[in-house]
Image (tube, rainbow, N blue to C red; front, side, top):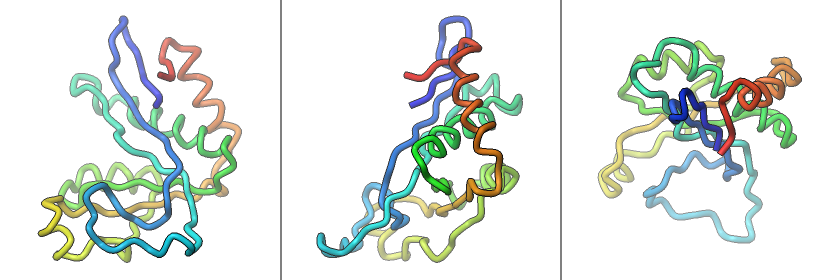
Length: 150
């Protein structure tokens, strides 16, 4: 987890993990692939959050870039994430950050009904089209400027 800290308070966070490339979120009730089936693992960004007073000032973008920098350092060529399909502003934010929606991974309506979850859209951003060194530098800069990794 990366945390942005200002005046001793956490003002933004983002998580980066390695997850299966299956588009599933917690609570997804679809049957899993058999354990012997190969499962591609990818860098996955989640829980990007910025305190409301600082939204629209670039902190979310900087946290996202730092998360992508970690993924690049871990040797991943792309990053995946989910976003609520019912939040156009959020979807626009990710589109502006060059994340492409992957509607083929949308959960069917029966899964949403059984799980009680909202529809989310899986997104992907290839890192081969960006300067990986600058992404890695973004992760380092978070630590040098009083923003830190938890």
